[in-house]
Image (cartoon, rainbow, N blue to C red; front, side):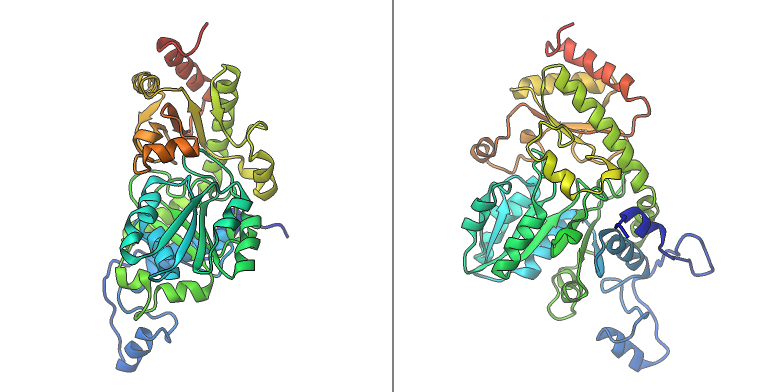
Length: 401
């Protein structure tokens, strides 16, 4: 039977303490035991169904972690207090002093800064490559390389990573492939394509409301157990814990993700076609002209579309600013970072979410100073929204009547 991430979530049986249709929120940092031996067994991970302390496990967090694992088709999951908490914990669990990482040069700015700047203190080297060039990726691998890191759809240039190809390469070299799937939940299932570890910022599409920050790591039982080992686990010892109230609210929102992704994708495809027809350079993987279009089609769960992210290139930061300011006044959406919200968000990536990337590297990767990244919202009448965008384009001289 074909894998469907929405069905995986639909089939979960998560009841509350008194038969609630929503799982109970466990508002407790510590848990009691009637027998001392049970506490010892729980501390050693040998008492299934028992909880000790909420940095280790909290029932509310486990509900969400299990749901994320079901959606991804992995054996297990773990949730964190932010997307960066998930990314950094997963990477640090896989590397030690003197190791090496191969990463896509086009990646979220916070991730780039962690890889390029922070890991230096541990003498961990990182080679940044064009992730769409498999020969360049393979050429960058060294004897001390421990992992390849990429995003399914890269931020902000929306390149498409060849997950099966990268997985085969990682397996040949005995290393791990870590994939950030934040832009493409449900659309792509990286673990099903060979990724060893999948990470998320749940803040974005998965939660969909921009009312919290959270992250997730999905992988094998072996890897998740290593992450939360009380003596050596990165997630356990660094403590990036998610609040159980937030876990509960994200879990509820997860059940509508399939509906939202379809609408995000529908609206983004509509706007991408309109931008293209208007002569504006448009990057959207759903367009047949996109270099990764066929690759994404070969990997995706097609019922969810090509995603809600678009980038347009206006050439200069000044033009980008003028357009964004007018669109906000014209109620197109908000000039704001982040993505996956029910309203459209737009920002000039080089000056915001990719600002940690030095300008010379931005240019080398092809990031124009005039790039505007759109996270397209859930607008009910996307034609009306386009008319507002077109009006703003005309006001700033980017579209002729």
